Amino acid sequence: MKTISCQIQSLTSLTQHVYKVLLKPSEKVSFAPGQYLNFVMSDEDKRPFSIASSPNSELIELQIGAFVADSYPMQVIDRVKVSQDTGDSVTIEIPLGQAQLREDSDRPLLLLAGGTGFSYIKSMFEYLAEQKSERQITVYWGVREASACYELEETASIIASLPNAKFIPVVENPTDDWQGKTGLVHKTVMEDISSLESYDIYLAGRFEMVGAVRTDFVAHGALLDHMYADAFAFI
Figure 1 (cartoon, rainbow, N blue to C red):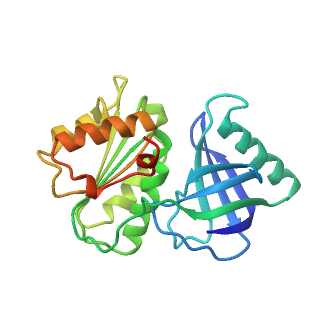
Figure 2 (cartoon, rainbow, N blue to C red):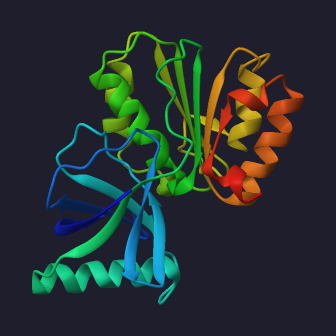
């Protein structure tokens, strides 16, 4: 792990409550797709966020869901805004995490995320697209409302560039104009795939969601040795 200073390249809104932060590191950084970083607020306050960009990108992308004023993530966004206005750098610690993509495996890949856990799997499928991977890859993204889906066309285009990949967004509470899958995302997976035994599975989302998915997926044939999530260290 290294401590790196970064300039704020940009801060944009993906939805009403989700922000994209692009950081320009002061030196080249090295990480594996699926790892995370700490955003350093102070020596005693370091906040983890998944890295949404490929390791090949010159910029580091974060996708931060900040739904409440003065919340843990909104305090980071406020720091980013101040740094952007003043031109001051921010500090990160990188890389962290043990749930990175296992590139030595040729098993089918199942990438599943809820909400802004999407950033975790985005790093992986972007990297796999750059590598022109021929692995079987299925990407599921679950959100509560269709309005929470961002960059859908861009995501679909990247995944469509892979020869053996598909992208399935799932909305829990759909409106009448939603044409895709509905319900709980991991239940949709179990409806679509008869057994998960052959898959390498990567999960991201709220801890309670990841815990429930792990339990249900194991009952559906998934092997614990082939399931990966940083949340597993805490649940």
